[in-house]
Length: 206
Image (cartoon, rainbow, N blue to C red; front, top):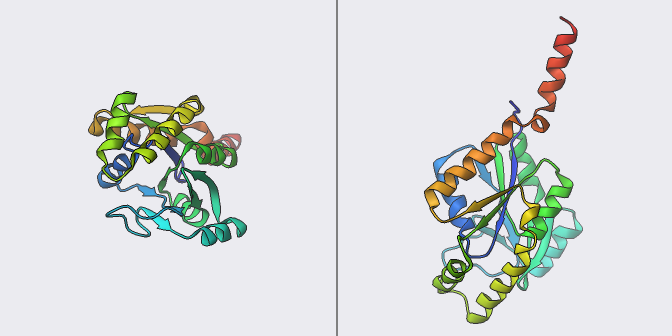
């Protein structure tokens, strides 16, 4: 099996519970590394710089783009988000399975650069539950909730670009399903090219 880590991108509607899934996955298993994105939005209550996000100014974000330090970047509901390159490559080479929690535009850009990337899309069981979760946060204005729901309509059009769909209705079951899918990628032929070449070479000498 490949020693290289698996790169998995997790996207989904705002309010689908992606962040909760990621935290629980990392709590249960020690072979994962969660990539921390850079963003120009302000921290929410309880969020810490360098843990949930790297909170940067628009000027700093532009500098990261110019210096080619981001794997991908996109603008989402008035703010910019991007994935720092160095952390991701270091973790993959160390054998960690790296999770990127990013939106759909960024996910497709990562897939273009790294074709073996696993794309997972997280959804609430239905639109009514999605709206309820957004309103339940208590930190979003009606205007922002409406913007996120409008964005969800656009994102729904791109769902079939993903490899797997995860319905986050039961957190425990969803975490275990996500873990099973990611771990199965280690056995894919495309992730074991080095082994294939080695066994072919060995067999040629038999």
